[in-house]
Length: 131
Image 1 (tube, one colour):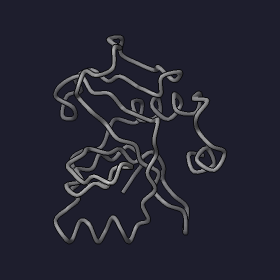
Image 2: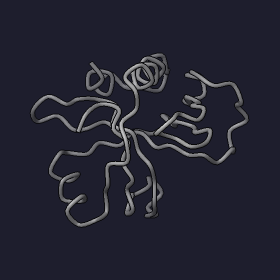
Image 3: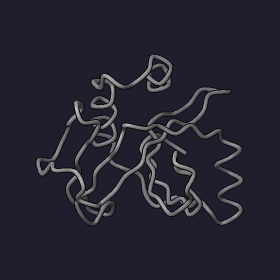
Image 4: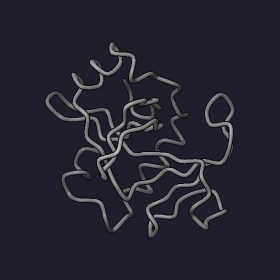
């Protein structure tokens, strides 16, 4: 899987202990023994942000409709990151819990990653995974 791959995860473990369906974006192309760094997306308008693009102070990147990708406005959320090793993703795929939906255009995923790098909430370890 490549940086920018969007996955449908039907048994996603949220930080609050709940499980459910979630679209997640792979943010990096890990080196051997490094995890995939991912973030969640939502189309719910709980964020009072209408302008598309980078809102790093709020840990949000707003995407408009993207042909062959997202069919409606989508909020990329990076107030929380999720690490997945390749074995866990592969296992989830073979168990029918994880599917590759599409891959974002390179300019879009690079804009998201550059926005994330501006956030005050990203750790040095997470930054190193993005490089």
